[in-house]
Length: 265
Image (cartoon, rainbow, N blue to C red):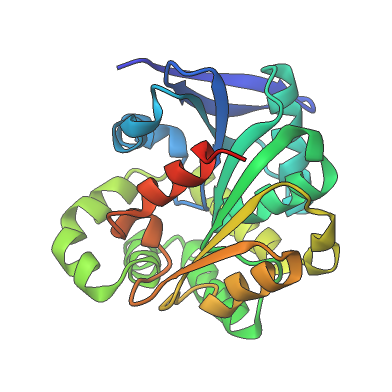
């Protein structure tokens, strides 16, 4: 497997990333918040996105290693922009999910030269009261370092009941091994999500945009996806009957993503 795991210096710190694929088109993937570094899942992600490897070189970015209490989504976007600049990436196909979708929105608004096409999955441009309450409850478990309860609550919020029941062991295994620093970062990034609001600037997004929502999104809610599409005039697709992690559960999700990124203008 053509897989490279590395890091790039940004703002006095660094961002870990992994890359794979043999294509010429840069494809930047910005994942959602997780209980540990996305780098620990590099091989799984690379295997899941094999259909993209002929046409794209895929770059999956983590957040910076030294997250501070006052971190913001915009700050994470600035870090990502610097990382992309240092790696020579511009006019990229960008796919952001959940928190990664928030970072992607900020990137498209503030650094449009870096984003050629954009897909936003299960994300929001601002946080609803219901979403804030759920994030508070999950963050509280993390703050108490009750990792067993955190893993279960997080997984049940992300996946539909049937998917969780079927793959519970694998899901729990993927989250195990979180360090104290991982949990600290999780709490701080959750707080950054709660403060995020870019809705008033979405008219600055000019690149082709596909918004993919989930009808049963129990974290951010399906209306958040509809709001982004309405504000930007973007193409919208809703996976009815799917939860927040439709990007993992829906069998045709990656096909839809691939079609949009390779569609002729």
